[in-house]
Image (cartoon, rainbow, N blue to C red; front, side, top):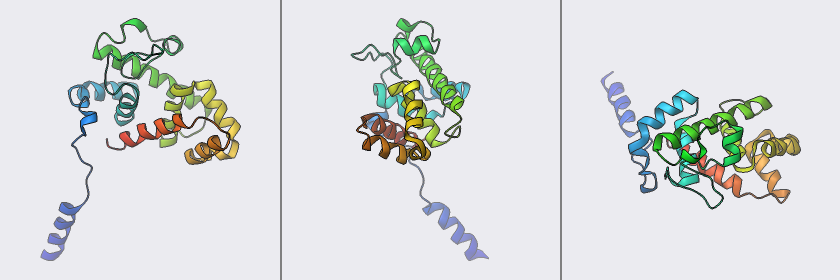
Length: 186
């Protein structure tokens, strides 16, 4: 009996764990993590997914403005802000809170779009990848991609492979894969 307990304790000690230490590229997360968690819970968006999106889009800079005018942590575009009914587009970069709110509203808007398609299943890895793809190419184009791919779209890798065979830009797939790789750390 004693050996069984010692063996069990040894397993617990040796069991691999996710590292809680974030790399230097994610140093921006620490100061905003409480607000990120609260907003993620409020909007129903996984916090890791949001962190991945932010890192890929803005590198964690809430005041980032891209060369095409996308703003904030999530790089919200003017047309997206209008479609998702995000108020105060010009104020997105004024505060961390504004940047987070706009981004979570956008992610929630795209999550509802993907949910309305009936596929992929809500909350799955594939579902969140399609939410991010909506930001990259627009929800209409993302949905069209699924429909055109037909049975190839049963899996993310099948969709990605089909798109590559069609000569589609796979940079969007690579960015989405990077978002999900970061998300898996949380």
